[in-house]
Image 1 (cartoon, helix red, strand yellow):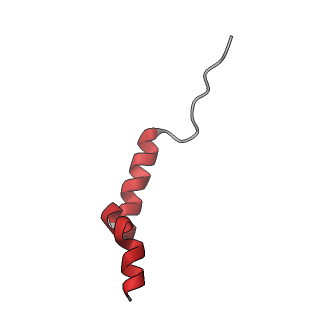
Image 2: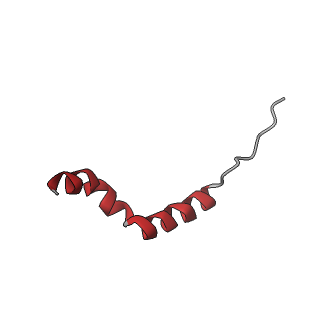
Amino acid sequence: MSIQKKPILTDEFLDELAKEISQLYGGPEYEKNDLQVRQDY
């Protein structure tokens, strides 16, 4: 008999955290080109 454990961090929390980080640090489109942009300078 197994007991299901609740996750410490819910999907909703992680989604909100991802949105906030994207707003602060430039969003996912910046992440894709981050390495290339830094190498260009």
